[in-house]
Length: 492
Image 1 (cartoon, rainbow, N blue to C red):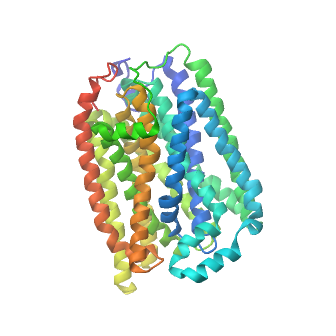
Image 2 (cartoon, rainbow, N blue to C red):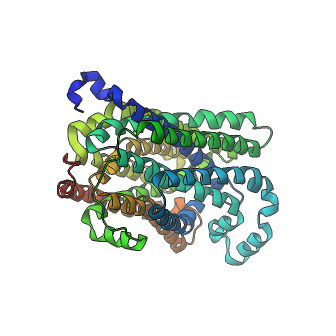
């Protein structure tokens, strides 16, 4: 259906025909709930790790480099094997229910018995023998319960948002529909993120005098209820919205194993470029976020204060991202094209990230009198602004342009290639950042990520450069890929 049938304002803000509502509305509500859960996960996982006993922001690179990445690879292996045996709906229900089961297990079994389950004596013994500059390694073992929660929370985005939700969207929508719908899904996700802050602050304040355990258990019950809502929406979509609209039929290729799928990606310039985009974003955002979270912990040392601040920043991300997605994202993509829109995230993340790291570097090398205000306060709040802008670009421009890049591909490339790129590629980028940070901390003999800021700047700039080169090459390759799929005649 053409956009010409809409009025000027409806074309910008609600380019959906009445006959399409039964498919679009469940997807909008689904994205709202998925993003709300993701926002709560982000706040909880960072709070539990950064404010844990003997822990700090320096533990995050260890987790992402040496724990999350292997688990992500294992999840990809499992997903691709199950994808060969079961339908998408079965995978969807099974994945969501697995998260619900773990949330309840963590909140009502593991965390309440933390004092009994924490290996305090052995972790202290290890720390006394290897030295304090390895404290961030020992903290992973000491706080293994929080570590497991961190890993599960990290997997929500690649598994549920990218592989399940966007995979479903790419399966049931063609390019013309994606240009009209996807910005609406982004807005719905941003709207869900807005509710993160009020929800977390409400329960944090309600149980401030009782204990953090009750806050965790209340939030976990909310997450479980929201997850069941996602399952209901998916069931309704499959039963009542799609039977009259057959799924998009694409040319099928022989099924590949995970290793063969990775080799296939390596042999495809188109998929390599997408993988580079995903890995670059993960590396850049993590390289900036870890020093910022370390600074936030210095300013807000208590668990409640730290979580409240992170939750407020998350809500601010939702507000700004919703405005950007609603008024700019879809219109920019339609007016200026895929390449221009895809270039926005690396330019913004690169410029603001460099400026933030320079501020941190100046705090270490200049006296406090050099600043007009408290330097720590300046770094924390500028980092918060940088985080808001970066996440806004991700939700409004990076995610939709990345997902649009998958649409011209055949079903096999979507399922296997997308699984490897979204899970392994995303984790590899963040893990690479962790390896770099850990290597520099080891080299400098320090346990503080703030002391290696100057060494991170060259890596950040180099990554942004190759990110932009990949976008340029992907834009060129898109015209070749689009000719292989009759439903993807529009260039990116």
